[in-house]
Length: 373
Image (cartoon, rainbow, N blue to C red; front, side, top):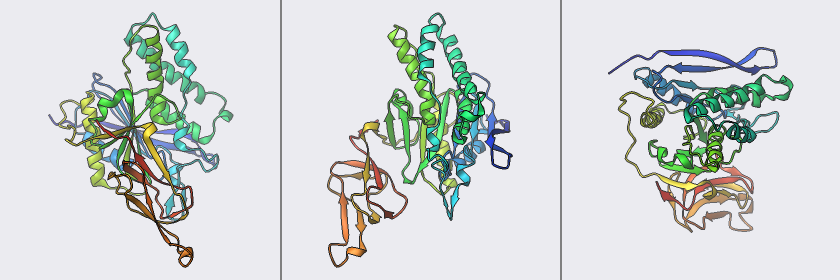
């Protein structure tokens, strides 16, 4: 049955700029009937990673015609400083220009909160425990936002405002892109089955370690709570799933691909019961996975100008060429064209955006020790 779901917009304040005016981000909300899990989706935390905004557009275009069981909150332009951080024709915006910190490494997690909560809430049933823990996470972020303003730098304040929205949801999707990249999914290992419902061929399985990212800030507390309760002899299935969805390459939008990515996300949300009788189902594709420890960075052994050969998403055999490095200043003194190879089988996931590299530049990232999901 076709329907028109109301979309509301709120512009929330996440800080102030130098002239004292508010720094705001748009937040779009769609209400479900309350019977399904709630969803939070954000895009463009890194300035050059703009494709997620196109995906949110395509999601809104489809969601307004669907019936929803769960509430959905969508945030494009999650980092208004990053997406306006330009140098000539290029967008920078991966790192806070003042502190040098990765914008996606400023989220908050207090593991002591989990330990104390597990000890003090043994008398509650699971439904009450989940509700109380979700509120505890929100209150923890609120305490930081409402504390002394001089303790929060710009990036932390933006991150905490976003995190407060995310903690209210049961499903969190953080939309990113790589430099020059194939699509891939960062998936916590406990949610491996859910990865089969995204139309994404490459899945990176990650552990419960917290390193400051949005997905980790949402799944780590629940994962660690489940582990703490398990030590007490009590089982709690992890009720929150959070993923980083890598949509391809930065510095461009592709509305046709954004529609495909939107359908991929709707397939997953349909599987999770967020949508009512939606037609979206996962594509019949082979999905390849590797563990985070097997996600291999290949650094340039020499400086020069690079021709990238290994195709993104391509399966590379040990010994096959992955790149050429051209060093014209050595044309008369040595071989100016060097061929680079890899010493193991791998899948090329992403590579550096520029052909000009210093020695030690991260040229490629590869899946190794690959298996099918």
